[in-house]
Amino acid sequence: MKLLMKTIVMTTALCFCLPSAAQPQHDNANHATHDMHDHEEANSSHAANSGRGASDGPVLTRTEDIESALADGGEPIVADVLGVVCDFCALAMNKIFSKREEVAAIYVDLDTKALNLVLVPGASMNDQTITDLAVQAGYRIAEVRRGDAALGGAS
Image 1 (tube, rainbow, N blue to C red):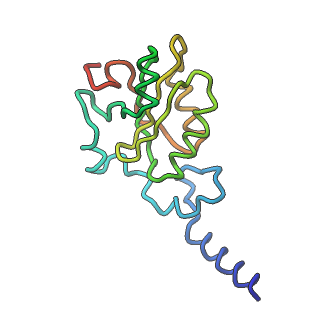
Image 2 (image 1 turned 90 degrees about the vertical axis):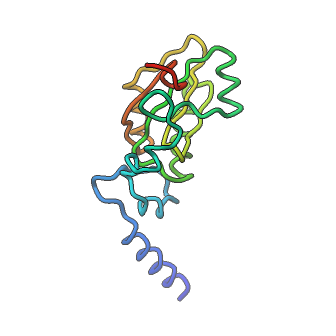
């Protein structure tokens, strides 16, 4: 009886939480409630006003790891991510990008909807690679800023 009830509850939950075909898919099986979030929040007033600098989007979020990687001479990159809204989103992005040897530091800022990267000094990662990795994590990239633009200076 308990198994039957558990199966019914899980089936019902899946029916209400399945993403539409237009929304990103995640490889995280425990992420059922994530798709209830609005995946097009990137243009919300909160996102539009959070963490903005002189550039048109969020600037690099300064964490201890980010600061250390910058001090070592790494290149700062900020990518606007469409649909990143919760801790599971951040975990998915971290899982994919942390595996890359070019990445010295990573931080997914849920407030600004931004992927913050600092590359290892001398390493490079083009915009297409960033976009492809984000797609592997289940997200889309709207824009990528580097260097001064990522730090809030002029492009």
